[in-house]
Amino acid sequence: MKIIGITGGVGSGKSEILNILEEEYHANIIIADLVAHKLMEPDGASYEGIVKAFGKGIVKADGFIDREVLGSIVFCSEKKLKILNEITHKNVDREIIRQIEEIRKEDPHALVVCEAALLVGAEYESMFDQLWYIYTKEEIRFQRLKESRGYSDRKIRQMMENQKTEEEFKAAATHVIDNSGKLEDTKRQIRKILGDMSESPAASGF
Image (cartoon, rainbow, N blue to C red):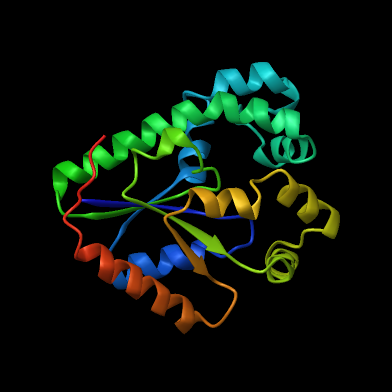
């Protein structure tokens, strides 16, 4: 089994990379945000801690956490974002490992790709064979976020400032993919990395 972590700043085009890996290389995709959202549901492992930390004002009438309200709180405050991350990360990590093990049982030779903005740190080094940092020029990221999500410049700037720096991402990554240009340029970089990876005998285990 080969396991790749995909990380990068908001608006860098990580979803585009995942689509390529799934459609052209039949990768099993795990998206940390979706895992986190599931764990925030009323019966999820993160629900109680989040409501306790941020108050019942983030809970909708149906009992579910209003992620838009929660997001507006944490993305304006590095301190509050840190609190949220401390509540959710261990639960998300455990669930990702569980999903990887399920895939391993079904197909020991599978390619697994896990995407998250926060896959930088010593605790992740043993989880992945490789960590890819998706780099995109800042002005392109700004434009993408304004066009696709309708975010204001202020909100985009706050989101970027609350994430790792480009230098931190690059220092942690085994590979950097420049996603600032044409799609075929990105695909060429992926082909090269996966070609080299297929020649490596290493297999993940943690």
